[in-house]
Amino acid sequence: MHVILDFTVVPVGTGVSLSRYIAEVERVLRDTGLGFEMHANGTNLEGEWDAVMAAIRTCHERLHAMGVPRIHTDIKLGTRSDREQRMADKVPSVRQKLAEGGDPLKRG
Amino acid sequence: MHVILDFTVVPVGTGVSLSRYIAEVERVLRDTGLGFEMHANGTNLEGEWDAVMAAIRTCHERLHAMGVPRIHTDIKLGTRSDREQRMADKVPSVRQKLAEGGDPLKRG
Amino acid sequence: MHVILDFTVVPVGTGVSLSRYIAEVERVLRDTGLGFEMHANGTNLEGEWDAVMAAIRTCHERLHAMGVPRIHTDIKLGTRSDREQRMADKVPSVRQKLAEGGDPLKRG
Amino acid sequence: MHVILDFTVVPVGTGVSLSRYIAEVERVLRDTGLGFEMHANGTNLEGEWDAVMAAIRTCHERLHAMGVPRIHTDIKLGTRSDREQRMADKVPSVRQKLAEGGDPLKRG
Image (cartoon, rainbow over all chains, first blue to last red; front, side, top):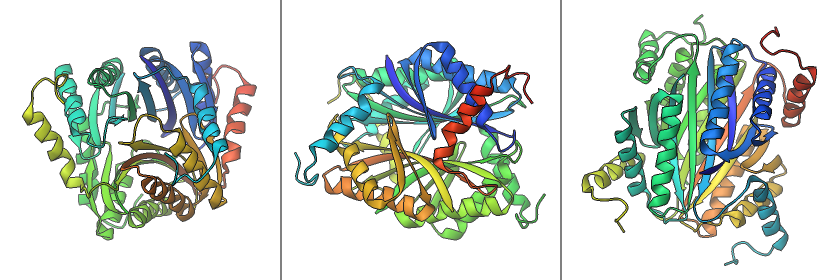
């Protein structure tokens, strides 16, 4: 089952600067071969369910190995059975609706 | 790696009443043998990382099999390397702090 | 607009033990008069949109005043225009579906 | 209090295609004058607490007015009292750590 998700890793109990841990998350993801893209509040990731969940588990293992005692992570994910969708399709689909314009309260 | 999490499954494109799908989520969890507890906005779940992630995947598979075309799920999870913690410890730990009382701005 | 939500406050950069901060969140909520219930991974809260968002803002202000330099918070919320729903209705609605039983793949 | 957040609006009970609703979310945000950026799984947004929460409330009001009966929204947000941070600083801060490289298990 293909999944598209966004996740945010929050290291707790290790000081206020988190960027080196987020950099490590990106290193882990590079090694997986999965599609991903970091943004200001998290990282978008897609692939088969088990592969993406294993990737996030590896992020936790790696950060604990770096000395982070406690990690909070948010994941929001989507799966579809009606059609295939890829992460790269999502923003262009909204852009197209914006380009079509019109009064949203009157559209079908 | 032990994980304590909260998740919310949101069936999309299948009407406005979702309770029978949430009931199915609970049936899936019962079959796993994992510790879980439903609350007003989601379900708390704990166990080994791979087991809990497989349980949530099974929820998606089951709901798609029931005809739900699209599913959005939120997961917020925590892992710790400093000590063992179980889900059942978390609320009592806060209750104890509340019972201790005092002025929070003055506590160490 | 009535909103039902679940939120989790994660204090960052202030050590690994968070329970006294979560206790303070509960004290803030008690003072608001809003309906709320703490669970193992967060707190359920309901009320008018502006009132609940002001309550969560007050939690942030209070924790920063206690010395927490950085706070990460997750909120998952729902609003409905089709009918009134209260937080207390949600679990019983699922319990009823569970009691009705039957084969979920065959139900309408 | 300045807040940096990511949010995802999930219209429920209105069919499987959501892009026209997400386009409307973007129209609402344009009118607010707040800083925001859409990505594959949500929208990053920043500003004063009350202004960003009012913007998300307006998104809910507008989508309900378009006929969406039920809306689920996730928000993950951060505030800091230690220093000012802007959304535009976050990815470059991680990029810098990646450029510095080295063995993460050995870094201070």
